[in-house]
Image 1 (cartoon, rainbow, N blue to C red):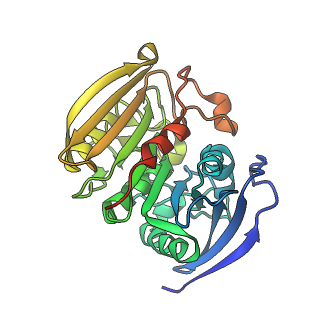
Image 2: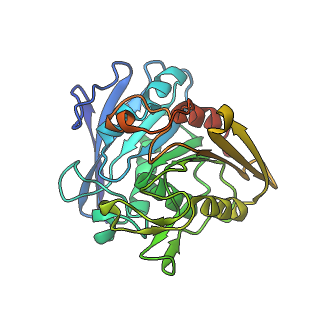
Length: 312
């Protein structure tokens, strides 16, 4: 497989979704050729470099998203500027350049799965290129994914658990299929990776209680109950002790799974009145339609969860 990487330069314009970009820090566009495709990634550097080696957070868009929209609306960029880490926004593949993009989770969705795109190997190579090109603290590489982007995070955790200090999943699932008898489950890693998960209990796209997706883009896929999938992953990663607490007068339920060591840790936030959304999101079209009245902010909580975690 031929691959090459070119840094195009500072991003000066608004993204495809016409959302104004951050005014702080520096954006660089990377075009990397891999397996016959040229793929874009935006690397956002903080305005102030606090250390010689910086943490890196890779953020994966949902189905039909792209790097510009992800960078400008998920809220990670602003936290990167404040806290001094590098944020990286890769893109999936689609029939058009930077439009209608998807990730191949092995069971879902769209162009990437239909064309058997090897996203897992591509991201592995991309991580290597980022480490070679920027001042990266290799013990502090983190992954974040929304929906279809969360599915590729699960796959990366499964394949390369030794690379990542912690991961975050928002409104996603590690399993799905054509019906309840044909479910494909991404295999959990045989070692713990600290994981924080958010899911709305009124999500119609990936139903919390399990069932068929209401989204035509997901091809009416069946998803098993989210709580069962998270617990299965937690147990396989060595986190079998569970403590449940309620927040915000019961709007938010937190299940904390702990286990044999510090890396066997899963925090699972269930938002009782939320749909298929990124909790606390303040920008982008999705923020206008969120059903939840909970005040939790996923982006801030993700970094708080990540910040003290690193590989040995």
